[in-house]
Image (tube, rainbow, N blue to C red; front, side, top):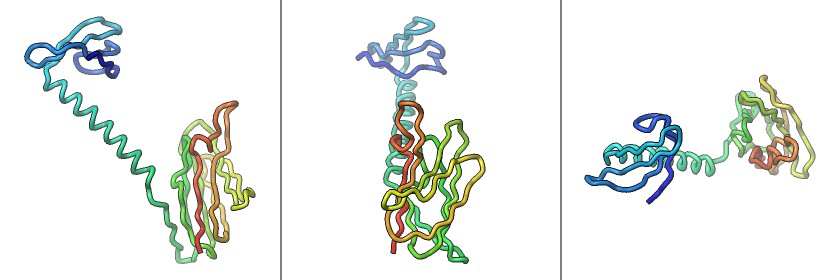
Length: 183
């Protein structure tokens, strides 16, 4: 049972590099062999080991549940304000737009405010009509920008077309969404 574990930064193995579970010992302790700055072996009691395992499992489970919930999130529904204008704020960041699925009503004015989270990677907001015509192409900066539309029913794609050299475009990395205009 030789299994590589995470780099250790705290506890009995602080600063030793990678830790490998090696073999069970008497009284349920486990011998760990380390490889890194200090080659040393150490025994860990099951209670301490089981707490570490429980923490690692809980963190992994939380990350899985969080990503699963985000993937199946319901579309963002806009509501018209007192002035009968539908408003939505779209935030762009490291290869994402939030929200990425927006539902609005046809026949009403739509106000989209776009902004970017702090970062060094430049992004743009491009909104395309149902036939692929570009309706908006706005560079995202520190200051939010507001766009106004009156759109007929249909599905409109928004995305960031930026690309660095031969890497995938931001759109190919998932920085895209759908604006669904319903009757």
